[in-house]
Image 1 (tube, rainbow, N blue to C red):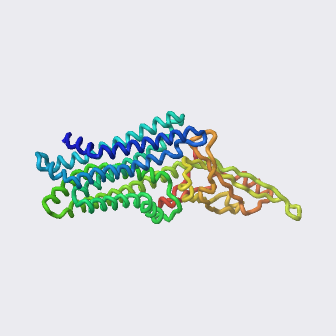
Image 2 (cartoon, rainbow, N blue to C red):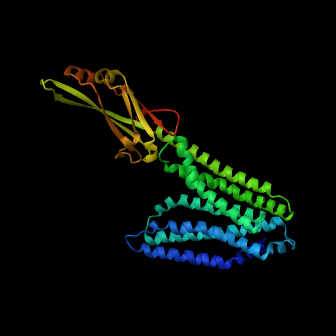
Image 3 (cartoon, rainbow, N blue to C red):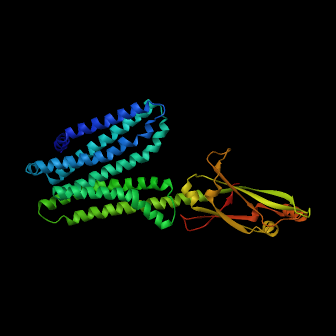
Length: 393
């Protein structure tokens, strides 16, 4: 099998050289641009990384094209080589080339970060992208090789392209539209896409393993002149399960994360301010203004914008000020980071009691008012239940 792997790699060595030369040239150009103090490498780093996605398709299609044109697969099987060995060697050769390309770009990026003086912490923002790229590269290789061993040249090429287009359609359109339509929201939190990357990458690894067996199954049926319907349907079924399953997993993780964030939202204080003013007759009245402050652990606008903070009152607050209750989008109360605890984000808003108080009522209200007069709940478009707010004590 080792000889078969080497044979496959050497068969496209010219293509591999062109790929590495092209990518090296692009990286060098980016490094030269990054020498300009007003241009950072981070502004262009996605260019070579996106190229890797298309390079993976070029590598696999070129390798398979040469095998179709030369007809070498049929000659190899006349040797003491089994179908399983031929299929596994082709997969291993493809994966070795793709892994080498991924490692090359990762190392060049790391060198670029060190040379440009950028903090290594900025690499963390690219980890999810690399994971996403890793999944796409091996998804492309897996489905393309299945079709290569199961169909004729033209059919396998177009089916491979179709599945790649479907990947882009699901990731960038369908998954987003399904979520927006299900929850009737305007935007999706960034954590959903992070969860989607992790889920689809994990399920994609299983596809890589399954694809080897499916490809050998389909190739054996093709050589026997039998229908390859079953292995292809297994492929289609798993791809659908992979996409739907990853979407559901990402959605469940998102709702759990939002529920945890809202559970961690706490009341910090309710401050009472009393303003006095005189009417036309010179009589003094007082208006009560409540300044309410909360703390939470997220600044994700999509989560804030889809969460409503509601409250109701009782006791002295309702009796004297006639303030019954109300609600505002949490995004309207967005504030800033706490000075004492940078892990917390403080949000605040104010409400005005509609009833003007006399001097006697004002004194009575201030004597009887307690923070327990207010009862707060959070309602989010992402979860069905209401969450009661507690005090941060």
